[in-house]
Length: 315
Ligand SMILES: [Zn+2]
Image 1 (cartoon, rainbow, N blue to C red):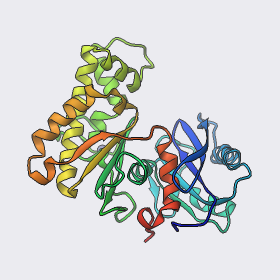
Image 2: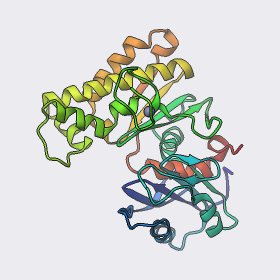
Image 3: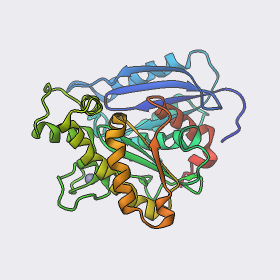
Image 4: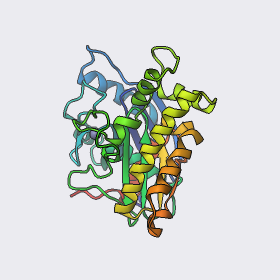
């Protein structure tokens, strides 16, 4: 579907705390983007969320000519059907998001993928990993997600779940993970786990502190915050070394609030990676920050439609 005529793709990024809708042009430029808090609370029903979403979509579309709809949404989901059950949005369990959008935008392509996959796609299409054929894109925030591009194409896997780097084991005896396993990267490096670890080790802060606050303290040199990011960076470097060996990667692009810690995270990450990625093909992998901030989810979602030859392959 790449190379469609003029017009814009309506892009949507559905997260547990924020909804974003935007209009993206063919070159990946975000022409207009709007954000709203995700309706939350025990009385929020599936249709309340749908209404909030469609209002945001209408405001983002304005009177532009829309040629397709691309969506990134928190997992898990049934892919490619687009029945979504985002962990952080309890009101949606097997909500038929793709089908509802296809009904609303009849005749237009509507494509939906995991939100972390969309970030990986954005970075490969127009961001930090542009021009590289083998890329892992990662988001480290409340969870740890990822997407995998090999030989210049998005890899979906059997069920659309390829790229779940958050559940690579980094410590067989490590903390339990929400997935039911133990010692997953996500269980060690996700923001809330970092905050809990830092608080247990004497980090003095308010009760509602987040990983972003911890990152700010690490940049200021707080010793406990630095130790927390050392632990997370080591886990990330260990997981990235494993994935690099399996997939023969060129580039890993890391985004999300935890990656904003900068050197306190990337120093230990690169040390762990250097220690474990020893064979020449693996040692050459480059790791850096993503180029896009909050807009990456929208840009990647739009690319599902605008560059579907590389990023959309429905089984
Ligand atoms: Zn896990």
